[in-house]
Image 1 (cartoon, rainbow, N blue to C red):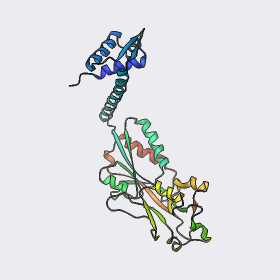
Image 2 (spheres, rainbow, N blue to C red):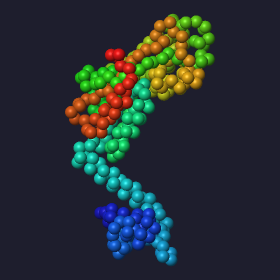
Image 3 (cartoon, rainbow, N blue to C red):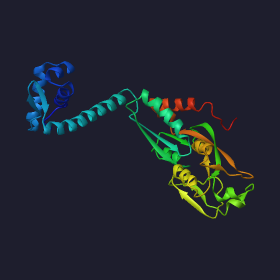
Image 4 (spheres, rainbow, N blue to C red):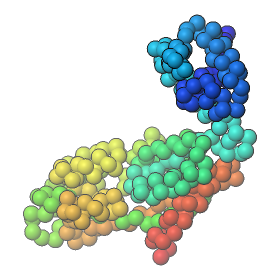
Length: 299
């Protein structure tokens, strides 16, 4: 049976943070005797001494220091529980799950999250990295609320956000750059291609040209970029993710006769617009605003 109360732990913390019983009483708007009584009852229930009196100061004992750390965690957790309950009572969802394809610009996602979290600080944002069909599968399985994906949902609950360019690149010293000519797909076949695996568990999709005799498959876009930058192969990579590497000379565009660049639309998908909470609506609205000036397939 629980023998201590949150109020007692709050009084204990107040004495420490305020620097004494008198100061704590002023801080928590209680009488000094009430603070003394709460801390005394806490010591009695725990069976340990929390403070030693040194002159006019109350100094934490070794046990008090240890229990203060545990008590602070307890109080923080209680505050979180109350905040979640308040969010639920006000109609704000306690959690927002967003599945983000690895090719979608991370900077845009982070900018959106920064603005939305300032309005809804108590909402827990769960950002899930996906590839190709993975985002939509999470929506369909009920494991995500919003998906940023290169494929629209079959249910038409989707909005095109932008058109992204994918660029064929390799390390500047890669053998393909040393051929000294405009490249064809036939030239690419003899060299290692880096591709990213679809994260979906069912109905996996392949994207782009996969004609190389030697292929390395990785599970995320970051690994693909790092391998190409290390000279391990070539790939079609999203321009926003490699623009700095191209500008600094870490990567170089392949001089392809055709297919040097490709474009793919990215969509914001959701399962049921009528059953998403205020934080999700704010996220969707902010994302629309941030991507407003980006090109789309209709332009």
